[in-house]
Image 1 (cartoon, rainbow, N blue to C red):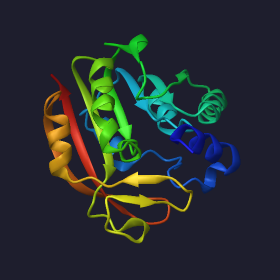
Image 2 (cartoon, rainbow, N blue to C red; image 1 turned 180 degrees about the vertical axis):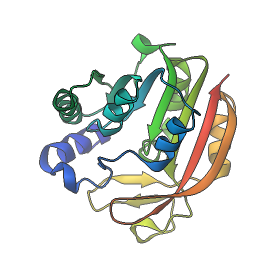
Image 3 (cartoon, rainbow, N blue to C red; image 1 turned 90 degrees about the vertical axis):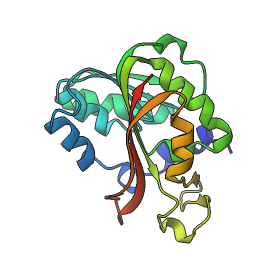
Image 4 (cartoon, rainbow, N blue to C red; image 1 turned 45 degrees about the vertical axis):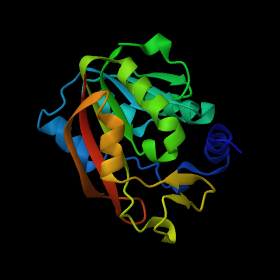
Length: 211
């Protein structure tokens, strides 16, 4: 089962409150970035937007938000949430590894919250090239993915299977630096603790500037 089929199954068969990454409240790091003015209202792509929680929150803060996800069912949830909350967002079902030509040079900011650890090393170059292409020159990219130092799912390996049946790749700062450096100026890259639905996680956080 590929990632598209896995995500369709999860968003179809699992209640939203039981999906581990579906957390209604925006993450502290994102809230602080907006409150401090590190990021200001602009045209933003929420990559792997899922059920739309963060897209809707950003729209409430004055951002022009486009949410992109591989799962049609996730996008349906996101559209329903935006309608209930009375905010305007655009949502698209797209493969982030596919042809995103329609979005080239469209955004000032790309947000990737816990997407990159779903993408294995052999596909990461294509993904990062896509992120660079959808950003305007000088646009910012925020990426957060699980660190290899995180004890999640009972292992220390790079590949770990989750209770939902997905497989995640746990990264080091060094390999991410090598991945980002050809395409982005690295403003910040470090390991942080983030809240999870059931327990905290160690994650690699990166703020990047499109070259």
